[in-house]
Length: 254
Image (cartoon, rainbow, N blue to C red; front, side, top):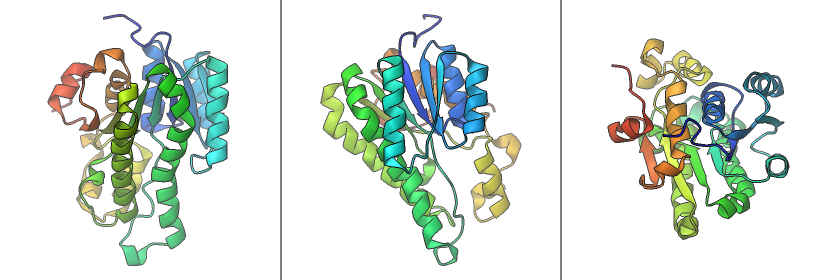
């Protein structure tokens, strides 16, 4: 295997300032890719870019704002000359609460970020990805397929994202686009801290030490972007798939 399997490729990572997104950016750079990182948190983005080096371009934007996303994507494509991968990692868990306890504005904002925001990034990146026969990895969740108390907006948005991925496969699969919805499992991130604080469903009672470090799902996402993953079945997949982990070269704890 090449020491730099993604050399010469360019990735666009949404929600890249912290957690899984930051780990994905670091892993992609380590495997040779140039990476545009986008999120609302400019200070964290700038610090991450400074740490990862000149192959990283930080771009502040709100994924819920289509014009801002398009401007960021166009800037990345102009700077690097191409786009090969889109990683849709931006997401929020709030509001956590039963439907009658949630704020309608906050509920709608979750759909706007988790689902409509992913569409914004896909819509802006698609012409570039079709030109390179590229890859889209939407960060999915078990919540896309299994309801959890208090997570109505999150479950609905992730289920919608899964169907959006299937639509992309139908519409563009014959043109060479690869599309995955990857569920990373429970990961040690700030989102999990909010989930634990809610105490509302069984996921909130999972201990921090039982969550995965973000570097493990990041390695799987980076592998899905590689040419050697072209024969891996598209659609929804999970870090709990032993065959996927074996091909991506990771071993889960326990």
